[in-house]
Length: 313
Image (tube, rainbow, N blue to C red; front, top):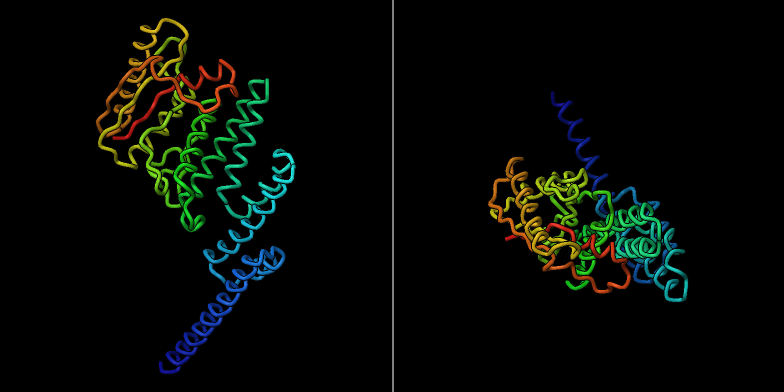
């Protein structure tokens, strides 16, 4: 018995030594990594990343963020020197593969949204807005994660990305599911807060069958996603506001938007939402506000106006 305990004690000492040695090795490597980052030595950071086995996942992630930041700076310089944004897509994709840098995700979103606005074929426009929405949501998620983004960007920047994500999601005919954090909490356009930015309202792409209160397939997917994150956030009360485009009779549009908001409220209640729901119809009274309407066709502007708005109480 004594021998067994002695052997066990020796193994504990051995592994303790290994752990201490690995910790010291990693600390040294992280210091080298920080020095390389401040000197903007991307080559040395590459070498350190390749030899970071002694480090924990969180520390290796920090090395990748430093490397991605240097690559982002280099990519930004190329853009400022006159390289077209479209030509930078491979560089930006390499950055986000290395680490989810919010700036790179937002830049990809801008590029895809810009390509969509220049395209004339509706299928291609929809696909590009789908990709743009995904990238904008990933940018918001990266901002939300303080381990990835220690320094929070200005609230005005977060709000701008959030609005761009809403626009692209309204302009694709495919429903873009909201994201979740690593712990499963609602993120992206489902967030109630993104650092200092409080999300009080968000446009939902709930489409309906023509002249009906019956949600189209995309609208049904949006309602299912909405129900999931509302229940996770345990809201006591929400307001749903139906909006319409200015085509057709204004009074009729207002009544239809009210009925559609009420129909969604009934579906949410039927499927298990436990909070109180106020349903309102605004018709064409509150069109979606865009900063640059000249970038969109008349039909796209109408598509932005036709929406259901969620307001958190």
